[in-house]
Amino acid sequence: MKIFSIIELKKIYDEMFNSQIEIPQFIGNEKLFSGIKHYIYPPHDNKKIIGYWHEGSEKDIINAINYSLSVQKDWLNLSFKERIYIFLKVVDLISGPYRDKLNAATMIGQSKNIFQSERDSSCQLRDDLKNHIDFAKKIYKKKNLNYKGFVVAITQFNFSFVEIPYWIVIMGNVVLWKPSEMQLLTANVLMEIFKIAGIPDGIINLLLINIKKITNVGLTHKNFGGVTFKGPIKDYKIILNKIKKYIFKYKTYPMFVGKTIGKNFILVHSSYNSKKVSTAILAGAFEYQGQKSSSISIAYIPKKLWKNKLKKILIEKILSLKIGSPRNFSNFITSVIDKISFLKIKLYIEKSSYDKNSNIIIGGKCDSSKGFFITPTVIETNNPYYFFDEIYSPVITIFIYEESNWKNILFLIKNSNKFITGSIFCIDKSIISSVKKKLYNLNLNFHY
Image (cartoon, rainbow, N blue to C red; front, side, top):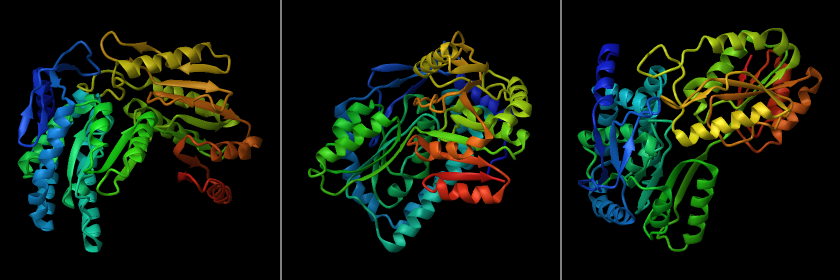
């Protein structure tokens, strides 16, 4: 792995930030510049235009499908070991010569601070690829899994390691990749890496097309073999319904791997340490401005613990956080991803300020004059369902409960269909054992 250098990273960041890049579609052996151009700007500096991306058409989707299917046989004719070797070269390039470039692209395009960027675009992407290689090896021992069609990958802005189904490509399949518009700097770098590593033209195609077009064309094609998706529930349902509608048209039964935006919680027992809980809330709610699928939306805190220590400690820690551009490595908080997200969060905060059931105890400031900045916000509420909006944001709701209502909170969590995962903070192992039995349907983390 390449040695990390702050000086070199800042140099590459500045070069990329002050350039004018044109990002095309990658279809087969061509880079397509349609001329239908859209601005690329850093969310933390929304007046700064650093380039443009070129929007594609439905015809481009058809061409990508035809080209990818035409080269799939040659890809399959490579031995499994040769395909593995190519992806190991991708890992080496990400860990080595492209480490700083990926970090800089992630920091500029997705407004991640240096710690989040390094964790995501270098470490997690590298580890994710290694895991996919291992998955492919395990599958290959049992069955050569090939869909004899193409797979559509639809990815979100909040991770550069993205949900491209690499293991499917390793097994011999081809992919049409539709990334988020706010993910294009890193997508462009990854396509460069794929090319240098030796992934043949047309095996992974980059399509800069909206989700409606990609589903209308790609998911209705007879050679559609599967889709991986991460995004809003409404888009998840559109994809699912489209597959159901055309299921008898496909040559094979398609794979569908979907992950939606969800809610996560912290439940604290009165026996737990206030400082550790405050750290968990800080990281869980405000890392990457609360825009990860693992971000915490609500914390259920016992009244005594909150009033005595935790509230004060949490406020002090939030006030110590620095906010600004990721170019300044001391900034923990940067901007939210775009104007749409900014306005949605701003409206949510404004509604909270007028709601008799809520009280903003810190944060709530929204400023888009330079970038889409929202200060870390904590809302106290007496309504345990207050936070159930589908929103990625640096906002956490604190529901204060009486210690005698512990079982009622467990019942509330168990019967909610909003949570993806959660964390339980408790030092009493008998209580933890009881919680495991009651909340067996959730993926939980326990902190003793």
